[in-house]
Structures are given as C-alpha cells and as structure tokens.
Image (cartoon, rainbow, N blue to C red; front, side, top):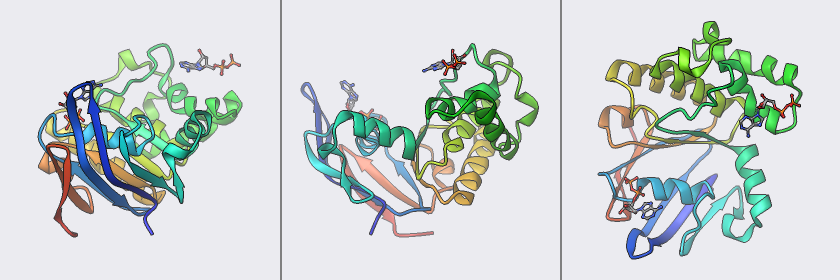
Length: 224
Ligand code: ADP
Ligand code: ADP
C-alpha cells in the first residue's frame, strides 16, 4: 500500500474551513504535485500529512501508523527522523554556514559536528553548491539558498520530503534548476515528495498531479 495516506481530512481554522474531505495517497519514490489556487487548502493538507497540523477529522497513516494516535513526542521524533522539509523561503539559520545548515538536522539527531558536516558535504555537491560550504545565507543568492534548503531536507535520508512552494520566491530559471536538482536527489534516494505548488511548470516535475479546490482533492491525471 501507500507509504503515506491521508483520507477524508477536515480542518477548520476558527470559522474558516481549510479542508473539507481532502485525501492523498503517495508511495515510496513517488513525486506528487499538489496544485490549486491560493487559499484552497494545499498547505493545510501538507501540514496535516506531515503531522504538524492535527485535522478535525479524517486520518493520516504513515508507514502503517495513524499519526493522530501517536503521542506528541513520538510524532516529532518521526518528523525529524523520516521527514524532510523545504519551504518557500529557505529558512536557513543565518548565523550558520551553508555546510552547518545542511548538517544541522544530523546534529539534532545526535551526530557529532565533524561527522555531521562530513555527511553534509556530498549533499552540497549533489546540489552543485559545494563551493558555498563556508558561506553564510546572507552571502548567497535566493536560488543558492533554496539549494542549501533542499540539501538540508535530504541530508538525513528522509522517506518523505514535504516541499511547500519551494520555488515560490525564485525566478523561473532558478526555479527550474532547483526543481531539477530536488527531483533528481529525491529519486536517487527513493524519497516520496509531496510538492505543493500553484505553478504548472513546477508541477511538471512530478509523476502525478492532484488539485485542491475549496478543501477537496481530485486527481488531475493518473500518470505522466
Ligand atoms: P493554500 O496553501 O492553498 O494557499 P492554506 O491551506 O494555506 O491554502 O489555507 C486554506 C484556508 O485556511 C485559507 O482560507 C486560509 O486563510 C486558512 N488558513 C490557513 N492557515 C490558517 C491559520 N493558521 N489560521 C487561520 N486560517 C488559516
Ligand atoms: P555544541 O555541542 O557544539 O554546542 P550544539 O548542537 O549545541 O553543539 O550546536 C551546534 C551548532 O548548531 C551551534 O552553532 C548552535 O548554535 C547551532 N544550533 C543547535 N541547535 C540549533 C537550533 N535548533 N537552531 C539553530 N541553531 C542551532
């Protein structure tokens, strides 16, 4: 069955309905684009699937476990160990160099500095930013920063990468480069990718697209 499966999710923020019966199943190694207009519920769907937001009803099953049935500590342990995240703005730690940023999740997982940074370097190479290892986020471009964010998301060998508008702040050339590198790295590590985007040319990198409208999902096409 699917590695990650959201079924019939409902979520209302105060009086604003965000999800009204959304669902998505994703298999290991699969890249799925979640499309739809602004405010349709894409980010809320991603956050429910990542165990960040608790749906009012419906279930998210990851690797045979229902996320809402896990304790908070177990859920955050799982998020840290099995999931990687890329957001619209890289959210890099400004005080840390690029290699330190990529190594940070490994440090937080308990690895020693030298060991974590050694493990981070091949990811910088894979994202073609090895030359930036010693620079800080303030010294690099937006596109380079997103590549650092992708390297950081992949460095702890996640089984699922959640990418929410990862190219939203980039021009189209840099956006396409980030998508090429993100999808190549994810395919190489057989990670599933939940890719939230409102741009068709970004969604084109996925194996499959679904559309969210008014909090409900539907398949756009079964496969490419
Ligand atoms: P999308 O990612 O498609 O733009 P979102 O999931 O961010 O959609 O938002 C869906 C709806 O839920 C919108 O009406 C949005 O304003 C609302 N919403 C999202 N997050 C919150 C929040 N933390 N508090 C209140 N309303 C929210
Ligand atoms: P050390 O044992 O060397 O102090 P730490 O794990 O405390 O190692 O921190 C290593 C580096 O990562 C430090 O520069 C620290 O400021 C930074 N760091 C650790 N945790 C976080 C975090 N959650 N957010 C940002 N920076 C962090």
